[in-house]
Amino acid sequence: MDNPVPPRATGPGPRRRDRHGRGMRGPIAPPQVPLAASRADAFADLVQDSVERLERRWPQLADIDFMVLEVPRPAAAGEPWNDEAVPLGGTIPAREGRRARVVVYRRPVEIRTKGRDERAALVHEVVVEQVAELLGLTPETVDPRYGED
Image 1: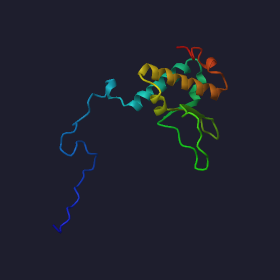
Image 2: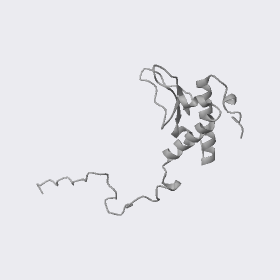
Image 3: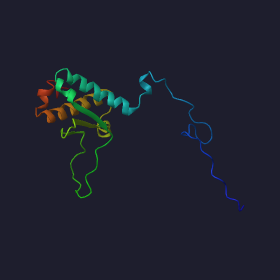
Image 4: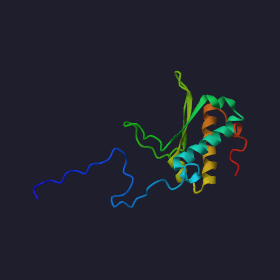
């Protein structure tokens, strides 16, 4: 028993099945069906739908980048923690050759919603509010249907 057990050789790719060989062999659904889309992809689609809806009315939105991040970044090391609610979105103004950006945070939005329709409505509200902040307008000006539900 003095001989150590050599480590098991791992293949070049990720492990596809569990250690007993009973794991899934492949994807559950083909890539064409909505079931195959991840939650992050579905959320990005909601943001894109909202942006396309607004671009019809505001063509200058083509000059703004829209991003989805999982969660907001924590405060800098020297800054104290604040007791404010977790933000659902944010803006980064244009500067030095960079385009303006609107950021929507996926996890805080998902936590506050129960279903896809409710999530789509909240995503649209967040996008409208951030675009309004960037353009210096009220959300009702950006989308006349803002706040209706």
